[in-house]
Image 1 (spheres, helix red, strand yellow):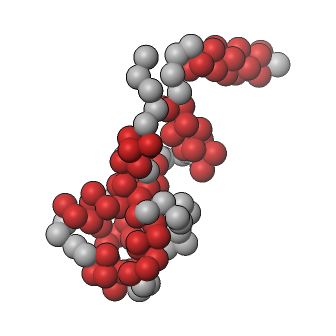
Image 2 (tube, helix red, strand yellow):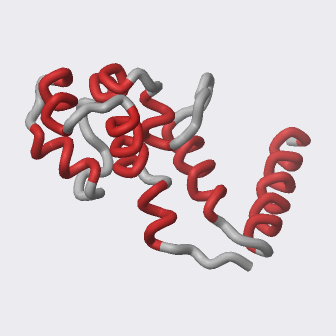
Image 3 (cartoon, helix red, strand yellow):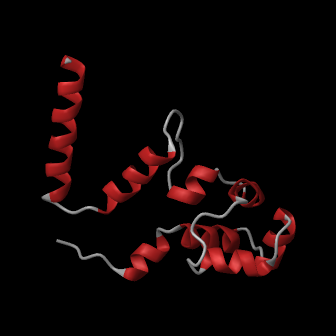
Length: 117
């Protein structure tokens, strides 16, 4: 069973995605900040994981030509899903067996019970 690693978490975080996309576009932190109307320090705080829910996520995503959902959660499409569903999906992707199967079974039983009621 693969173990959770801090470096893997960082790569799959908001900060990791922002850093990779910024570098891929050939932009500096300062250039992204100017495009968004914020400071380089704010971009740096996001990239280092010190700020996990920036207020200007829409502007940052636009400056990097990505969707806010991808930048925040690593997902391409979120149509119809709220913040809780997206966050649950992100956490789900990090679960290992047997926890993943047990949780899925529990959710399916609750959904089936709700539909029957």
